[in-house]
Image (cartoon, rainbow, N blue to C red; front, side):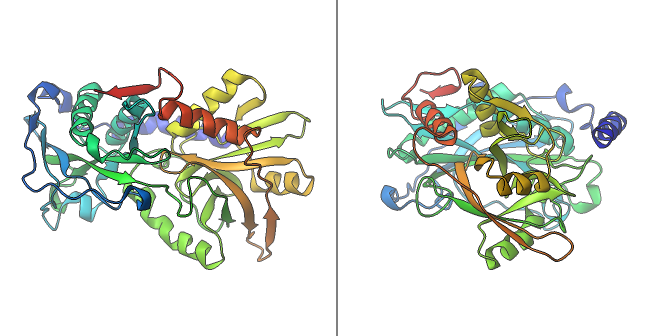
Length: 394
């Protein structure tokens, strides 16, 4: 608690230093009514829907919107998907002045194309821009532009259940490195990709995790809650180490706290020390990304009321103890890309050089809480169940 309170006090002190330039909103904002659409002259052949990789094949078009200091946002343009031309000293390349989002569009069983809680993505994208001192924008107007892009690319949305059109909004600083403290130019672009499952081998399969406190992904007062490339590039080293030890992903620890799994949020479904059935996840304390799938699982589970739903700090030692006492029902990771995937194995390597390998139970029958959450999300996203979280693309 003292550590969390210290972070909150620090956050209050630092807010005035992380504001975007004060005049960003005083100039032209994004206006979807000014959107220009330039249809490609060279449409691509659609990929085989039965063998779609995840986010590797790009669709025909992209959305681009430029920002200039003293002017604001230019007219949005949808044009042919093409490479970008950047100054070699651009802030995005030299100092990591960039953020992004991950969204999906789904082809429903009724033929309607839907996005899932895209307003939450827009809010998080705005907050990321704010924290990274990049120009902010009108979230609703940007969403209207993305709507137009998805509508134009609707034939690229896979019709097979479990597959989707992955949407990647990105915002980068274009100024040469020497001007990093005074952003004068930025570029917002959105690309889309017809995608199959995130993990090869099927729509859901168990994954194994390596937990080692030697390296951390985030820390109090940092940008662990921001969807920026700088949060993920440094994790690749540990990801390779995990794979060398026959693990799929890294279970990130801060000291002994459990935070995230790879680029996903993590849940533990167990019987806690008080004998209560509990669905536990780490709190939004700046160490983890405020995942939209995470929030949806929390809200659904609370609405059902079958288990205690808790957001609080917990340690790897508590997980190990619960495993030894056979109190763990499931551990699963979740995110836009992977949706939900169970954990079946956890390798813990403390700093003393020891090693502990845990077998984690998982139940992929429809009666398990994990599968109930997955099926509920799936039903909402693919139009099997009407829900206010969906955003129809017309």
